[in-house]
Image 1: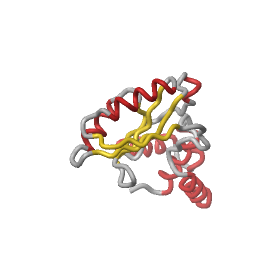
Image 2 (image 1 turned 135 degrees about the vertical axis):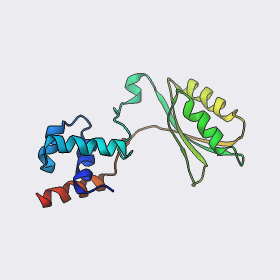
Image 3 (image 1 turned 120 degrees about the horizontal axis):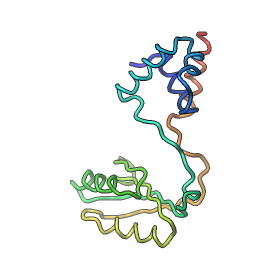
Length: 161
């Protein structure tokens, strides 16, 4: 179980994944060594799964990005999700319980390439239906942790200091 200091570490890293151990330690009021041990524990316990850079796809030459809902034949959901997760053009794959069994994000250089990729996915064995939604404008980027968690965690640690 994680405590308030661990939550504060997560909140600080979510705001700036390049934050130093020393800067984090100063906020949570423990030593650098203790902070590093806490962070290692969070990593070892799979609370922290990794550190990522968030990029603008268009600046990398990917002009067409789509979220695609996929419905699959019974018994094929996991297999299709595994195939999609191994593709080099997918950035997110999830098995869901909503309108579609699988949700996937696909990046393409242009609309023509995206349409080709959609056709490839549509042709996978066991795919029943595809519902692509081309992203026109990102209003809020993916965040690693909901902002309410960040606020609550930092307020909690500040009130104790």
